[in-house]
Every structure is written in C-alpha cells, then in structure tokens.
Image 1 (cartoon, rainbow, N blue to C red):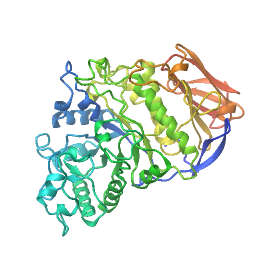
Image 2 (cartoon, rainbow, N blue to C red; image 1 turned 60 degrees about the horizontal axis):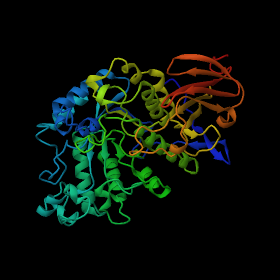
Image 3 (cartoon, rainbow, N blue to C red; image 1 turned 120 degrees about the vertical axis):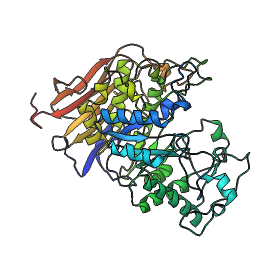
Image 4 (tube, one colour; image 1 turned 120 degrees about the horizontal axis):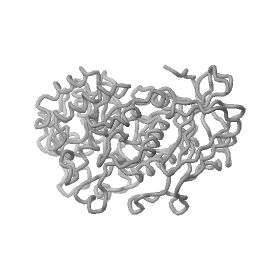
Length: 504
C-alpha cells in the first residue's frame, strides 16, 4: 500500500467557528471489513425505462447482459470487483420448497453456474433483497430447512390491503426462533451460491418518506430486528458477506447505533440516477444522471459527516452515497466533464463504497482513465476508506450548507499528508426537482474558493500537488485557492515541506 496506516487518525472537530484537531479511532465494520469496496451495480441501467431508448429498463436485466457487464468489469480491473445484482434477480412471488429466496429461473436457469462464472473472472457477487418472508409461503406453511418450524411460525399472513411490505408479497420478521431459522436458511443458501454482498432495501426508519409505500407505514415503523437477524446469520454462515442497507436512512444517533452494529454500509440519501420512465420524460428528465442529484448527495454527506464530529464513538461502517456514473456519454449521463470530476472526487473523499452504474460495455475512451486513475483510487482505498473520510467545512470556518465547499481528510501517515477538495457546487438546473440549501444565495459563474490554513488547521509550508492534473503546483504557506466554475472542483494532496522527500 502506498500510505502507512496509523492506529488512530486525526479528524477535524468544530469548536465555535474554527475546528481543532482531535483523535478518533477506526474500527472494522460489523461484518469485519477494514475498508470499503469498488464494483458495479445493475440498478441504474435496469431503472432507465425511457420510451425512446428501449435497450435499457427492466427487460435489459438478463443473464447475457449481466455477463457482458461482468466481463467489462473484469477488463476494467483496478480493484473494481463487486458485481451487484439489484431487484429482478430473484422470484418475487414465492420461495423454494423451504420458503427460501430463490433465483428468477427465467433470467437465471442455473444461478449457481452463473455465480461460478462470475467468481472465475476474479469478481465477487452481490444480490438484492427486501424485508421479510413470502406471504404465500406463510399461507402454505412450508417447512423451514434444518429446523422444526414451519413458515407460519415466522408471521401470520397479511391481507392484500395491508401496508408495506405486503406490497412485495412478504412480511416483516419478528425476533423469534422461527424467524431466525428462516433467515439462517436463506443466508446459508447464499453462502452455498458464494454470495459476497447483500443489499437490503426498504430499511426503516428513513430520514424522510419519499414514496407512496412509505406513506402506508405505521408511525414508528422500524426494520431494526430484520437487520440484526441478518447480521447474526451472516456471522454464523462461515462466509464473510457485506451487508449494505438502503436507502435514505435515518442517521440520528440512535438509528446509526443500530446500523453500525449490524451493517457495513448504509445509504444516507436517495438514488443518484434519475428515475427516467414514461412519467418523468414529460417532466423534462431524459438523462440518467443530473447535476442536482450530485448536489443533493453532497448535502447529505455534509450532514452525515458533520454529525460524526459531535460523536465520541469510533468510526464504524461506511456512509453509502450510491452509484458513481461518469463513464458514459449522451443520454446515459448528462454531466459536463467538470461535474464528472467533482462527482468522482466527492465519492473518493467520502471513503464510501464506489460502485459504478454505467454501461461498462460503452465506457467512453475519454473517461476510462478517470475511473482507473491510480492516485485518486489510492486516496479512496488507502486513506479515506481505511482511515478517515473527508470532513466538510466552509471557507469561513462554519459547517453550514454552502455553494463553495472544502472537504479535508487527514493528516495521514508518517508524512502527515492532507487531502483537500475545493468545489463550487453551483446553482441548480432544475429547482423543481431539488433546490440546494444555498439556492437563493447562489452566485453564478466562476468563484474563488479559498481554504486558509486557519480553516484547514495547518501551519508552515506545504508542497501542493494537483491530483487530477498529476502535477506539483508549488508551495503554499497560508492557504490554497482556485477559481472554479459551477460544478468544478480541484483535488489537492498536501505534504509538509521536508516530509516524504518533498521540498518546495
């Protein structure tokens, strides 16, 4: 590894309007992971249901197309090794003879053989689930494998007009022996299929309800027990699996105490990709990605990271900021080159799981080097995901939402290097979809983003390197700054003069 890893890390904590250095220890995640992963998710492409682009959408989700993405992921290399299958991979109506989640036979005639192909490419495999057991299996009281229980012992059947999750033909679990036996049987099956990651969707409590399904939930609805039971089953399965919770989760202290206990990552906001379908097209949404979604995610990350600074507990688990989509062009993207660079820079600074949502078979040659840029990936892998994610601060030293942003991580290793991202997050292109908190105060066009050493809590001379440009830019004694257009950013790596062979 490029960077040394200390036993403790220095983070920035806000005191009044300036922040002072404090120590915060790092723990492995609930299922034993030291750093986050990189890979690819099928969700954005299967959710892109544009009437004029029929190559994508639900019908795109086939074994053949997924194997094409797997081969392209293998070719991409550089640590991108998780192939994540979203909804549609499994039968949504009933389980197998023991009520276990089973593959969709229309898509995967032999799912275990598919998994073997993926693993033979040197990749890992992830699958998607939603809460609970199947209602039809509960009605039929199928026997739970390796137990004395039947499915009716898990829960009682639900009526067709019952609230979520009966919408999905499943029921939430109760913390009883039958529930644990059923989840154990499901996870053992996953282990037999060599599953490496479970995406657990529709977990509550959420930060806010944003769908009709959420509105049907009773007050105080929670999936805490479901998550805990899956964690226990993973621990007992003999196979290490990443447990990813989704989406837009409550990040209050009490909620994150539970997420940290059982899961390895938790989605802190809504989806990045546009839900392009027959309804959204008339509203003027045609591209798979829009800048307002990145603005929204940066604000969610600001809220989450600022909250961590007020905690006395160790860092554990990873904030998930959803898919990274910078490799395609045309209708599959919608971002400028500068916006793409900011997008990936924020994902790298967050230390979050970095999974692509692009069509990997159509990566543009201009952007492929961005996805595989060694120094950016090293910052993500060796610093921000293992040691300390980037901490948000404004040029005036406050942590309020702002168009002009500073993200700082470090110092790291014996060389005491610091990583700083300066960004102009700009105004908004669709105020009806998302109005940034700074919307009424947004200054259009280029702005000088200044990070003084008082704000960064640095002293002395630093040698500055522009990471994306791969060039040393000289010495900085009191501040770093850059005039940045809307959506533009710069990523600096700063080393104290005389450290690491750096003299400037």
